[in-house]
Image 1 (cartoon, rainbow, N blue to C red):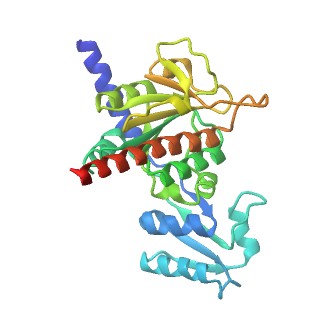
Image 2: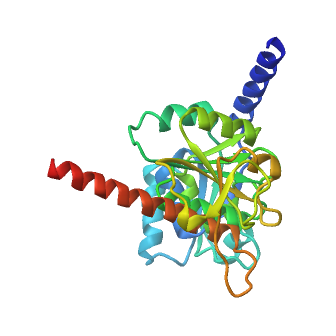
Length: 290
């Protein structure tokens, strides 16, 4: 017991230390990503660079307005120079911003926030080794659109939040609760203690663990649900899958073996949302008849 307590305290200390750490500064580009970060986290923006020929663009004027409100320096320069800050062949739309870096939440910070909002329906995503920043950004965008309460990622073997994630999430990652942890299995255990049920979204419709495998359309998601999504190549790791209460697969036809993980995430989060919108509507109708 003493050994467990010492190890558990060490793990928590490591999680807090890592979660407070920012990724090193980087540049993001595109009008929507820059606008979103200026709205959600203006203190993270060090500088904004604008195309010197874009005076009449209404959306860029909005960028200027938000930057001035946040007292962020704005520099006008040639589009050719601005595009040096972006990934090759990317469309900057004449807008680039330099960020301090991305600060992840830790588990305790997130728990204090999410459990205090009084919402009985909560959706959480746990990402197991997502390697492509484009997929990561697309997942974040779908999760935000569906009203997810948190997106958990590991501090190793997981692509960090970077310029591509900002771009493909259309800037929603700036306002998304992204929580970084040292151990996904330990995190699933904590979420279970909070009342969440764990659903692995897997392409494999067979399961050699204790979880019940079913078609996602037959899955009766709980109001407190965690959706686990695995890496692009190998899916959910066996250790993480063994800690899921259920495993749900998306049915495939015409010989298609699998879907892109970002597409799978979008299907899963909106299936959860569809079910709970329906439940909430039925409960409201029932209350109105009483």
